[in-house]
Amino acid sequence: MQWTTEQRYTRIEDVSKDEWAALKKQVDCSPWRQTYHIQPQTGLLNDPNGFSFYNGEYHLFYQWFPLGPVHGIKYWYHTKSKDLVHWENAGIALHPNDDFDSHGAYSGSGIVHNEKLYLMYTGNTRDEQWVRHPKQNIAVMDKQGTIQKWEKPVINEVPSGYTDHFRDPKVWEENGLFYAIIGAQRTNLTGCVVLYSSPDMETWTFEGEIETALPHFGYMWECPDYFTIDGQGVLIFSPQGIAPEGDCYHNIYQSGYVFGNLDVETQSINHGVFTELDRGFDFYAPQTMKAPDGRRILVGWMGLPEMSYPTDVHGWAHCLTLPRELTIENGRLIQRPVRELQQLRGVQMETSADLCDEMQTFDSFSGTAFEMICSFELDDADSCGIEIRVNDEEKTVIAYDALEQKVHLDRTYSGALADSKYGSVRSCSLAAEKVTFHLFVDSSSLELFVNDGAEVFTSRIFPSKDSAGIRFFAKGGRASCQAVKWTIGA
Image (cartoon, rainbow, N blue to C red; front, side, top):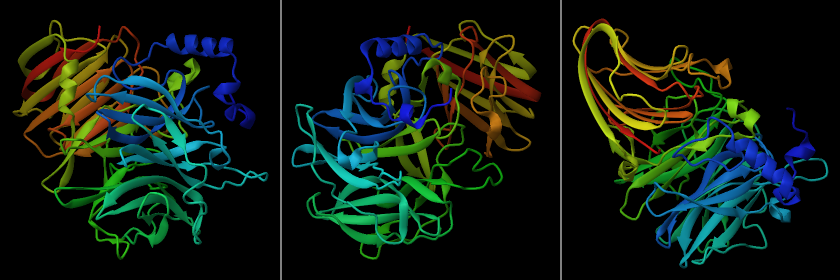
């Protein structure tokens, strides 16, 4: 279906109850609705926003177009949780119904201030010539959950030298001042981030562009995030327009990080190389927050812009990743599923085997929603791995190639295909004699943590409901494996 501009800017408030009920029924009948991931009731979900802990609960918002699987006029939808596992839908948080966000409440972040949760976000507006004019706005949530927008933008104009691609403020407090970085595009059509400061969240001063060693790295940097872990600064951003290089940058857009401490006085960051956060097919626009116990927690959008997905025909698209704890180890950013997710574990099963150029299955090792940890020790096998969501025609393959020293994720035969022009295999280098695959599989997704979070592959898959088999294999020699699996959900 081709959506017109008028359809994309239809508001949920203008849809009849019967139309809404029909759309909800269509979505509910989708065979790929998730079991334990955050997903939209209807329509399209994208960037996580405003991720924060306030008044005893985690609050997570996301971009939402309610009426279909396209990027139409965006709302903020609100979910909340006491444990990062069980999420409660709290309804629409921000309606794009003011002059300063008339064409969409775009992405932003949250910070606790004056015993309230301040949400700073980009308001998308357009004039009569359809020219975009982004505004940076504030909304405030109190302890009763009431959210009130401020009447005027706190940053009303784009500074000289930048285009109207100017969005996604991430705010933090440092040495008694508030700072916000905003993703931007220079007038020479290259990407960057800029810095603002404020003493009170109300009056914001443009400090300048953050000087990096990446002056020509894509044409736009979206969803920037800056934080420190044990004194080490980390800048995360999602650059658009990066050409593939080796095993890297094969999605339409990328998300990654650099290590470096931001000097807010000189607006500069002396940083290392840009490293992709995720090696899979569907990961973008991540956002982090600091938990009460000091952990840095990340959630990402399990999807990508400008891509088609098999759920589109059912009236919905996308979900969010599971929360991940970030640490820095051996000069790398490590991602692990938060320990609270162990609450999801149901029936436990264990198995082990010595494989010699063969494929094996085991009783009770099957399913469409589960967690599994499987370790392989290679003897002389050329490769080893797992096939999940298997039936006679479908499979998703996770393999370690000992000859190439690479991990491969292959969704060529995973069922209905997501947009396939970007290929069906993702890979990364890994030198190891023992390989551990930690999988979270849901109805239409796979989150794979390799060797305790050294690498992560996040991907949507769209197999048939009867594709529930699990197989373990070694090729070209011997390898031993040990696996433990937990059911999740019904």
